[in-house]
Length: 239
Image (cartoon, rainbow, N blue to C red; front, side):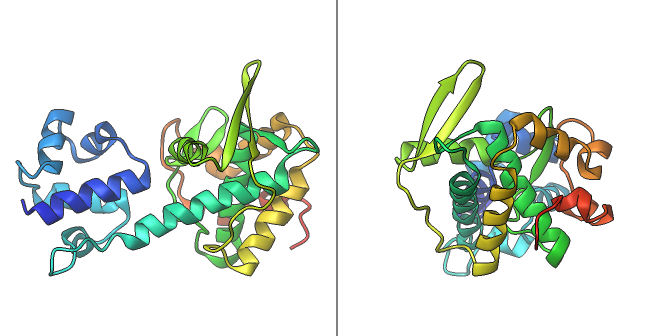
C-alpha cells in the first residue's frame, strides 16, 4: 500500500473520531491487522477499501489523495473544526445563568442543531457520525472534541456529583466556520432549552424516531429525522 493511502486513512479516521478497533471491526479484520494497514505494511482489499470509504464517508479516490502525494483531507479536518464551533456556540447559548452546562445536555443541543438543519435543508450542519447511546444520540467525535477544546483552553471542565459541567473561558465563541443561518439556528436551539433540565432534553431526543428504531451503538442515519412531524424535531423553536 502506498504511504499516501495509509496516511490518508489514518488522518480520516482520526478526523471522524473513530478508533483503530472500530475501523478494524468495520472491515472485518483484527486490530493488529488494521494497524499494519495504517502503517502501510499490509494491502487493503477492494471490499475493505469500500467498507472504509463508507465508514469515513469519503470516496476511494479521496483516500488515495492528490497525485503529488499531498493529503486532500482538508475538508474532513475543516468539518471537525466546524463541529467544535457548533459545540462552543451551543454552550454559549444553551448554558444556564451561571454559564455552565452538563456534558450530556451540550451533546443533545449539538445533535438537535445538526438534525434540525438536516430536516430543513436535507443536509447536515456538521456531517459527523452519530450513534445511539444510553443518554441519546452522540457524535463519535464529541468526547475527543471536548478533550481538545479543554486542552486548547477554550472550555473548562467541572465535576459536580455524577455530572460533568462545562463553561466557556472567553465570553464569545468562534464562528468562522458557521454561516449566519447556521449560527442563528444554534442560538435559537440553545435558548429554547436553556431553562430546561438535562433530563428534559434527553427525554425529547428519546422520543424521536432516529433514537427509537436504532440499536445501541448503531449509527443513526440523518434521513430518519425527516419522517418526524415538525414539533417532534424542533419543539416550539420559531424558525
